[in-house]
Structures are given as structure tokens and as C-alpha cells.
Length: 77
Image 1 (cartoon, rainbow, N blue to C red):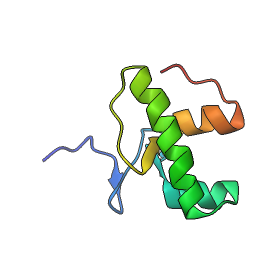
Image 2: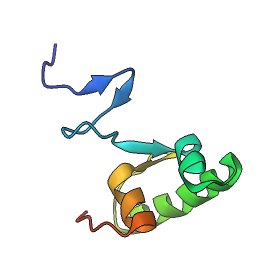
Image 3: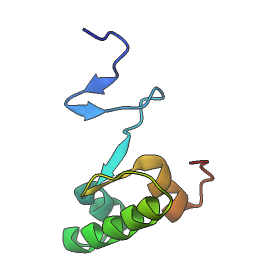
Image 4: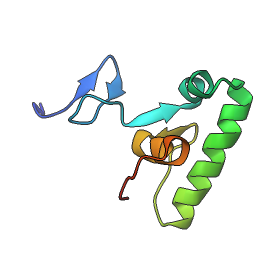
């Protein structure tokens, strides 16, 4: 059993307590758009990550990357 794991309520969390991924439902709520449009946004962000050589998960995007793209926070990936 891994004691260093940061898993709460079935979600993966980073060491600072923030979620590792933003789901389409969460993105829709944060951005005030429909869930369908949020999936389209996440699909585009995941395509950008794939072009940079990263693996992606459908319907989710890393929280740091999402914040960088929408809130202008600087994140080194």
C-alpha cells in the first residue's frame, strides 16, 4: 500500500491539494459554457499537449495547463 498517495474522494490531487485534472463538467462551470462546448475546448487543449509530445486523457486536461491557458498563469511543462 502506498502511503504517499494523495487520493481523496476518487480524485487525484497534487501535493498542494489542487486537483491534477479539470474535467469538462468543471471547465463548463468555471467558464460559464455548456458541457458540450467545454469538451470541445478540452479536446483542443489536449491536441496542443499531444503536439508537444504529452499523453492526454479524453475529457480531462491538466489543471496547470488549463489555468495557464485561461487565466494567464505561467506554468513550465
